[in-house]
Length: 67
Image 1 (cartoon, rainbow, N blue to C red):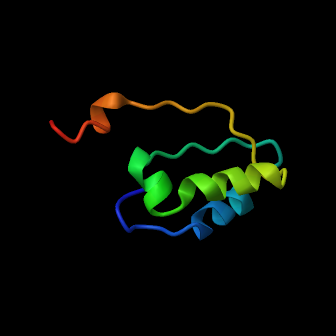
Image 2: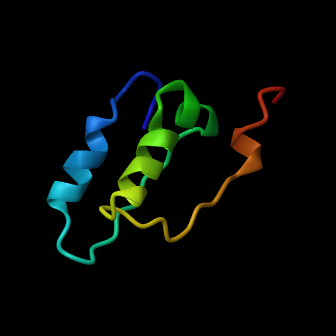
């Protein structure tokens, strides 16, 4: 998910496209979790039982802005 590319409705679309028990994978920069509200929205979906975080990987190479 690129800078200013998609809003939070993309997560609802992901849910609509999955079979029950399906898995979705997406990538974005860590700062976009707060900048675009992806992080809180993902947490909201999990609290509502619509979504379960299975794994989160952070690749520091891509969060270091001094490179």
